[in-house]
Length: 138
Image (tube, rainbow, N blue to C red; front, side):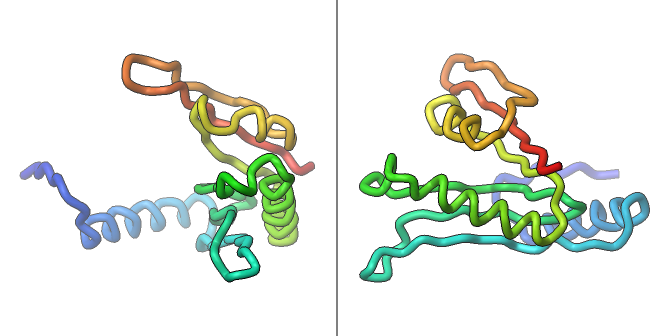
């Protein structure tokens, strides 16, 4: 057996690892593939000013990215985007949503939307605290 250390993105390797994990998951949970779910807000000029991006699978909404441009923050756009995204996830049969956020990002914003902290990685030298959050829909 040989073990390699790779210091660059290798899509062939990532795809092989992902395929192996999917095969394992199908054996335990059935054949379901992830479906992308992205909600985007654009300015009148067509510029992206905010959005929510994630995936749905096995009744989970896995939120990867939530962002709102500085000039639109604090005006309810983030809340609106999250509500639309969650509504779409629920329409797909999702029972929970999951995300993680850093302490300087938006943990209180997500808590205001009904997310609960279910795990943390404490702050340490050179790294902020990280919060793993979940929201149940039923």
